[in-house]
Length: 218
Image (cartoon, rainbow, N blue to C red; front, side, top):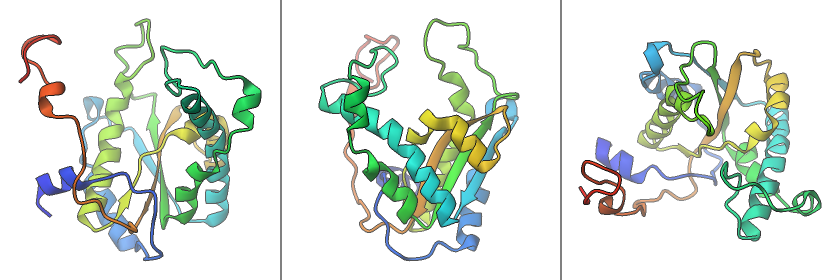
């Protein structure tokens, strides 16, 4: 596909057919995606390709607690998991919320990719600021997005999920991930039931300005 077409049609895919995703294709996707930039070119990303259904079932279960809080907050008009707004929903309400649907893609995809970042080689220039750190993500999420772009180019799709990170210690134990690694994303991949041909996004004039944040639209 033409590059701009891939960029404009790579949607979040959560429903998959039974079509196989061969190792040869998966290898090609990852082999091209690995050229994503990382801080200092330290290349601290590791990818675990999980096909075993038992392991995936556990990952799906570990997804549910994060999803329960996400849905409960959304249902009560809150911005879910927002670092600036504390959760105002009580634990009993969260526990009673059904979050199982968030685990379905992990069970129904052909393969599940778990992305990890080696924090011992990552730069976090915002570590001393009084806010949630985001900078170290620059060393892993370009790789994740490259995978989704490459998958789209191959006729496959997936979705970048992070719900499981709320139970990171259990994920690390399940997959034998070393202590210095952070779990950054879980990406189910497979053949989409429906391929989106056009995405909806805010117009450029609403997100790009000249010279300052409050400058005129670009």
